[in-house]
Image 1 (cartoon, one colour):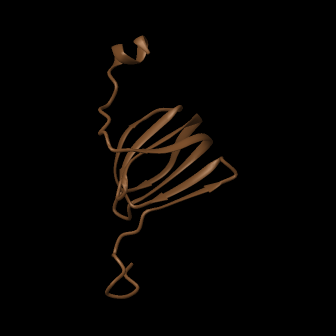
Image 2: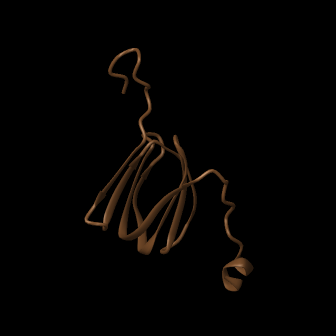
Length: 93
């Protein structure tokens, strides 16, 4: 929400609680995800979340909001667009 004319209408924010629950605002789309890695496009670039037992608890792209639970081990941004991994690529990993 814009506070004044100089403030943009979107806002990218990441909030992490005890490394077990994370709220991400400003999400444009959800890429690949599994229990060890979630890749999403945000207002600030590609966001990669790595951990154990990751689960998308809530997804609302209309409000640009995602809630993830599980043990978060790393959060990083990447400018490269990640394609969904194929079945063969997952086995060869």
